Image 1 (tube, rainbow, N blue to C red):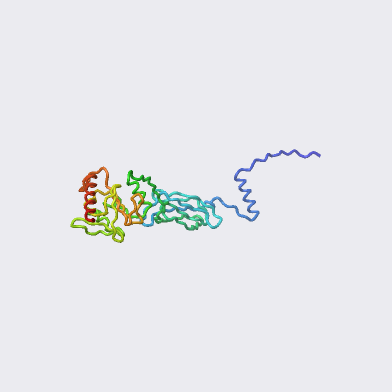
Image 2 (cartoon, helix red, strand yellow):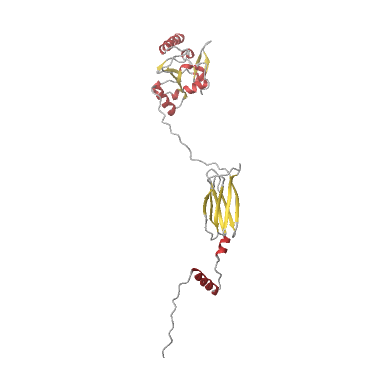
Length: 291
């Protein structure tokens, strides 16, 4: 028996809407409810705000505002930078718990927790307080070269030996009227009257120190105010007996080492050879008086 002829129809592929309908039917059969596109849009929130300086209320530009992942499964959104008005905005923020972090150089960091509900529009007003920045210590290294000539040895002795030292700057700061005035505050030194216009110097136990000027040994300190003028001084060293450097010989009392200015006109003291001659005269007078 021959079956009646029947025409076979070609099946057309399902359109996009048909597929969505099939998926909806499958969810319905399984007891679930598929998310609708309109509901997903309604659950998206917007977070916006403005950042101000706490003390002045001035908008803060260039600050980093971050919505990081919170304590729950919420994923972070990222970071926005405030504009010149201090404003920022996060779009398409899903509901959940976020960590709000605000950073700006020179200000204290702000941290807080932000709960975002579905379909919310959150307006934030934030402020930061100024925080001083502690920098690393600044170390300045100076390549200080010692002065030439005798003052190089003066600097060496001042750094390594005991004694009392006056450089040119210290002498000008003290501004003594006479040379002996510079020694009045030296420990163990005494300034004693030696006449109407002069003083003598005594160190510990009342002894007389030896005097050296520009590398030449002079006398035991008598008439020193006539011999040395404060404006002529470049540096002065005072040593007690046990402190006197070997290059200045041995003396049971100690010594006073005087360095005068070089290359400058002398004020009140004459030239070097005049001072030396004057010292010789005083030494002769002292020897005669002693004898």
